[in-house]
Each structure stands twice: as structure tokens, then as C-alpha cells.
Amino acid sequence: MQRLSGLDAAFLALETPTAHMHVLGVAVLDPSTAPGSFGYDEVRARLESRMHLIPPMRRRIVEVPFGLNAPVRIEDPDFDLDFHLRRAALPAPGGEAELADFVADVAGRPLNRSHPLWEAWVIEGLEHGYFAFVAKLHHSLIDGASGVEILSALFDLEPDPQPTETDIEPEWEPERVPNDMELLAFGAVSLMQRPGKLIKAANNLGRGVVRAVQRARENELDVTLPLTAPRLTMNRALTPHRKVAFSSVPLADVKAAKNALGVTINDIVLAVTAGALRSYLAQRGELPDQPLVAAIPTSVRAADDREMGNRVSTMFASLPVDIENPARRVDAVRRSTVGAKQTHESVGSTTLEQWAEVAAPILFSGVIRLHTRLRFGERVRPAINMIVSNVPGPSFPLYLAGARLVALHPLGPLLADAGLNLTVMSYMDHVDFGFIACRELVPDVAALAALVPDALAEIVKTAG
Image (cartoon, rainbow, N blue to C red; front, top):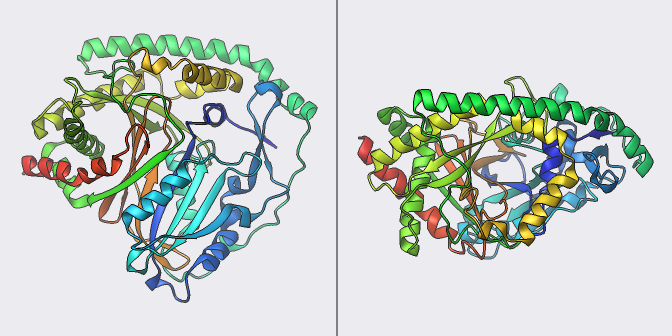
């Protein structure tokens, strides 16, 4: 039995019937490289043989009575791989649109909390004879960095690898489900420590805010703040329904623009996002005269930290959709991310983790449900317009049960009143974009995704 960290517990508590806190990975696979047959049975065998390398996949959540403390994880005594791994087939022609519709339907359904919080599908019927492997995991299990760890556990560097010592599974022992008294007793120690942690967190936050304000003034930083976002139709109360779209661009073009303009890859990703949004919002007749506000999840994980779970913080950056010139738009993003990074360092990268540790899950749950019920986000300015996350991926080919990974599109969760999430991952020689949106707020998200290549092309042209 293991108590969840404050952040992991927060992602559980923040979930509502319309804001599901799961993430997805959409892997497109070419079975022609498999040494034998490829399909559901082969993927199931590979997954079963690797379960010991990803322990959270066999652990289920047990809630503490009244939400007084963080839930615990136990080795699920009723674990059944066949419950979690399913199979499906796309209708003809099995293209990107059909795959996106399937994934959107999967994304719009919450995970069953009486089982380990993940599901996966092996999908047949894609064009070119391809398959897809779609995995849905609750955010309380993983962040972006630990998601890459799961990727490395399931995928191989060659189609037919030789067995290694890591393929030998130690004996797995399920656990008994604890009763309410045991759960309360297990959490009693951390409950007694909470007042001291609260004082420490408050002191650290106060000092951090003072440092951030001083640093911003001294260095004349361009700082983006939440609750300053323009109101858009995508920033209203969510429904549980989702729309999904994909896009890919050459990594070489992203790097060329980065080098020519003296910025980071993340700056180019954000500038491309801003350019695509500028065109999209203009087409919808709601282009604002100020930048959008994006929440940027940021890993605070140490380089040698291989544990599952969340080690993340959040920065806020502007998406300058109000700037027409692509070069000026990139520079505005650069100034915003520099300010965001320095402010984040001043406040403290572990501040979010500290506050998550001292807040009872019932507090998170109560606040988010009250926010939703009162439609608070429609009465004031939105805290943010959207979420943008960029996760570095592998630069070498990967294989699942012998099938070559062709593309990998990640998808993140939506938060209250922020009806659009963009998650980006590089793989081999391309950068894959995964858009997920509330169906009622951004019904034409595929039109936005289609604008990504042109948004990059105008930056490359300017940089050249």
C-alpha cells in the first residue's frame, strides 16, 4: 500500500464529469517490419511480458474516507489484462479523420476507478495496412517524462530483440483491499504533519513571490499572468464530449527556424501555435487584439528520477496572435518564455508540489465543482485560454511487437473553461502535434490542426 503524492492525488480530485484527467498516446504502427504476424495477440503478449517494468499499470486506487487524505495505491487483487486491452477496427478508408474520431470517442469517457486507471486499444483497418495502438492513462499515474519511461518499457529498438534480464518478471503479489479504519490509520501520520508543511509552503511561496517581483522589475521581464486572458468561445463551461486532430511537420524545418532566429525549439512550437491560432481565430471572426495566455506544464524531475507519477510545475506564456509579422511573433514568444522561466525559478519549481501536499483532496474537489456549478469562468476573465505542452521524444526508430512506430501523437487533458489542449512530441525526423478539444466549444479543431504546416512555413520563410 502506497500513498499518492499530493500532485497525483490532485489530478484525481480535479476530475469532474466534464473534465477528465486522463492523457492519451496515439501510436501509428507499420506491421511490415514485424518478424512474424502482428495484431492484437502479439501486442497483448508483449504488454503482458513487460507489466513488471511499469508497476502502476497493475495498481488500483483506494479512496480514503471523506477525502481527508490522499488516496492509496494497492496491487490490484482482481487485475485482468483483458479488461484493459481491447481491440477495434476503423471504418474505411481508415485515414487520419477516422482515427481521430475513434480517439475522440475514447477520450470522452472517464476511466473506471475500481480498476487500475488505464485502457488501451489495438486498432486495425488503417490505410496503408497500418495499425494503431491507443493508450489512455490517468494523469495521476504519469506526467510527460514518466510517459516517455512507459514508452521505453513497451517499445524496442529493433523489430526482433533478444531477451534480456529485464524480460524476466519477478513474482507478483496482489494486495488485500484495506478497510476504512486501516486507511485512516495509514494516513494519520501525514495528517499530523500537515500544519507544519502548510507553514513551510506559505513561507516559501511568500518569499518566492517577492523574489519574482523584484527580478521582473530589475530585468524588465515580459511576464504573462493568469486571469489576463481574452475571452474566447473556447473558454466556456466544458461538456464531456471531445474532438481530436493531428498534424506533423518536419523537425529539420523547426530546427532551421530555431537556429536562424536564435531561439529554442519550444519557442518555435509556441510561435507556430500562435500563427495557426491567429489564422483560425480570424476565420471565426474572433481574433483578439491581445495575446492569448497558455499554461505550459514544466517537468521538475531530476535527470536520474525514473519514478512514475507527477513531478511537474506550470509556467504561463503568451501566444501573440495579435502580431501579424512572423519574426516579431517569434520574438514576442521568446521574451515571454524568458520571463516565464525566470519568474518560475524565482517562485520555486517545487511550490506547486508543496501546496498539493498540504491540501486535502476534498478541497481540490470542492473548489473545482463549485467553480463549474457557478460557471465562474464565464463571469470573469478566463485564467488561461489553453494548455500547450512540448515533450522531447526519441530521435531513433522504435518498434512495438516488431511493428515500426510511424508517428506518435500525445493528447493531454482539458481543464475547466479551457476547451483546447495541444501536446507536441518529436519523433525521428518529424514533430507530431496532438489537438484535443471540447466538441461543443471547438467543433472544427481539425481546421486548426491543418493550419500548423503553413504557420511553420511562414516562420521558416521569414528566418531564411
